[in-house]
Length: 180
Length: 455
Image (cartoon, rainbow over all chains, first blue to last red; front, side, top):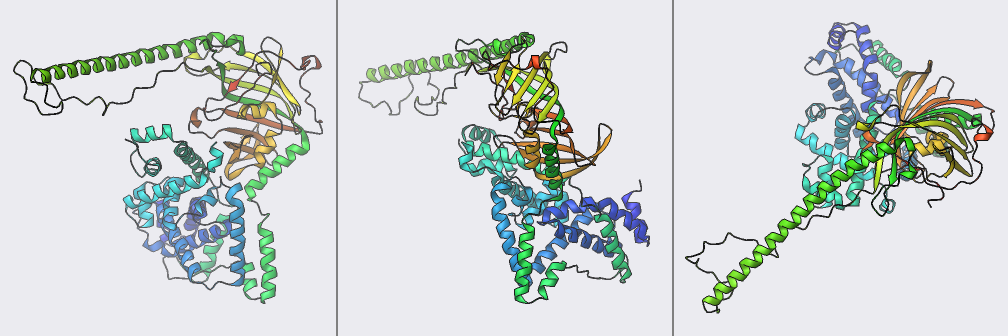
């Protein structure tokens, strides 16, 4: 199998087929990160596509200091944050408001029945803790590697990861009355 | 020194070192133990998420998106071309009148509610197909633990165990007794040391009292005194009522003798709750594994109850006591579709071969009969039928917990009654006698077959 760095080098020289191979090889990887960062498949799919388009655009600036997955996660993280910022400043349209209501209703319904769902539990996390848990807890990154993606010191990632675990475990705990 | 819940949970979550104080707190605090279990659940869910794969065709769509950007003038390392993809429904709603928007939104809301994760939908469909078939041939391969209770006089009641395993159980029991006796000896030594220390303190106190009396007896006992010439100063002593550690708990006799076992069985289950299986159980694990020691058994279950044929050939009424994985399959044919329907956090792992046929593997979390959480893996073939289901305890000690693998071949239209056992082998009547218990190794979840007469 062709090495990632060779593919990047070829893509940087204008070999579009090489970039296509990078996309096919790492779609699942980026998907796992994106899917944990947002609440639904459709948005995650948009983020994955945006990530690779931005990666294609930024290919000339990739020096190969880090693994390509780390580089893709970094781009994906920024895409997610950009999406959040746009969502915050957008005018709330009628359909968006209805969608929000629907999500609220679904969230309430799922709060009991879907307690086991990682999605439901992660929806309560702040962005920084969600990134930390996704990178360290789900994708198996070290605190240092995760810090490189999120632009934070490893000690910060460690504390964010611990806080995320505390919140998630609390959300996954049965009700007090169920403890018997 | 005690610690708070927050300190304990912070340590468990990785925010602080775990030390003896955390262990001590966990021993006493059910809420923090529940938190620790939830952390274990979280690890399992994270592991499932780690194996998630992208929706089919996403690579192709992404390649197409990059190609579209390229054709729009973007080249690798080139200038910014911002791509914006909007969802068609949202764009349509934006351009519509308010009333239309509300209708569209209503459709959107109504449309979202029944939407199910496509991977979970595969499992639900497989459950329906299993139920529609009515009956399925199954092969069961499980690891669990056979356990016998200890009588009030301190001896195990081996009558509940298959005869072929009693020797091994006795050896395991003797090992437990040896450990217990060592604990008793250590406890006695500790208590004797405390007694000697107490006696010494009393003697010292008496000496001090007489020394004060010799000086006229007017000085208060706590007043500073010069050391006497004939007696060296006593070493500082901890006052009897301060700083004395609490007495250790007395060792207790084990309540059960147990042995790891492997259970294999074949037979038929049906969607109405019936099951008819025959199989064997043999010891596994540690120094107790003896390949030539195994016991045959049979299970016959209907919607009204179940019976187990024990090694002596008699049938014992059985019931599912604590809802463990093994009993769930052997005693209730409804368990298989229910485990599929109750799937949560479903992740598609990838393609596998099951009995030479291509299948897709799904990993998920599901719930046992009593609501306890189990991990599970299902292999679904190209026709949408589940061919293999593996599940086990989702407990802190899950690495040692029971695991049950069930091979499934649906047999459509075979009727609702188990048919594997010959009529002469069916349980003749409601039985009585000793109990036969199978416990999974994990302490948190138990599986039990329990006969009627012992109750």
